[in-house]
Image (cartoon, rainbow, N blue to C red; front, side, top):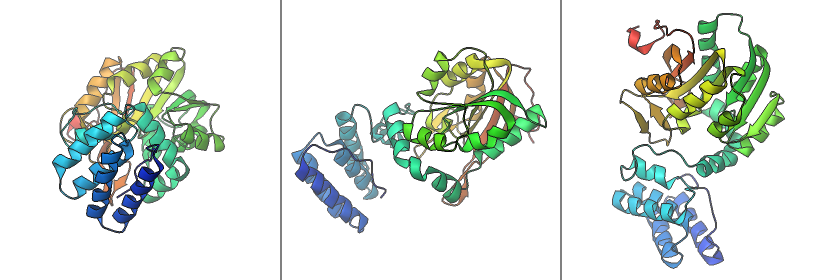
Length: 319
């Protein structure tokens, strides 16, 4: 069991007993850990972290109904959904089908992982989203690539920015996580970096100023892509491009996966980009990462205001 993000109960004894439960879980005794946590939440019923961890343990032990009850208690005790209990309820089909992730959950999650993010994503998961996006842009725009102003949505630690820097005059990055932005700032790639909600940032930006808006493995943390597509279209120059990756599967709509990342169907991508007034110029099946050694199915997408082209890159072309 991975260690959940911790928020103190405010009760020193309860916090210590919570840590004892984690020790039992790490030693391979989830039943003892769950027993301790049941005692902890009985004494401190507002201890969201303990409820959440109890939900994880109960699910491991095959007690799905008990896990659902614990996740519901965690959600009730944590209005900001710090631990993502709502997502687990959705995954267990006991809540909304594909709820939007709470900003607080995403921010704190990536603040926590920022220092080790690059090593985990590139080294452990074989991440190659930026490389695939550059290749897609070259197919649409040709070589050599050149853009004036580029906006890196959900820039993270700057992995996409590092790939894009040689191809643009000005590079702007924005991310919800201050920890990730701090890592990106250290790489000295960006002319401007902001910590902000992506849609709020886009809506505050001057219209028609970016030649490229790119989002590398960002939309796996967004449910409905329609609002972000509309907001991105607002800041695109008339000949600008909107390029991004998503994870996908054959089922329709949007699905929250076991990994707590969203999979978007190709039809949802089409609908969302069209809602922004954009045409698909390139859509190709790819895998940006592996999961337990298996490539994760995805799409690389480029859209713009120009005429739609259905080419061999389009999944529906039959190629």
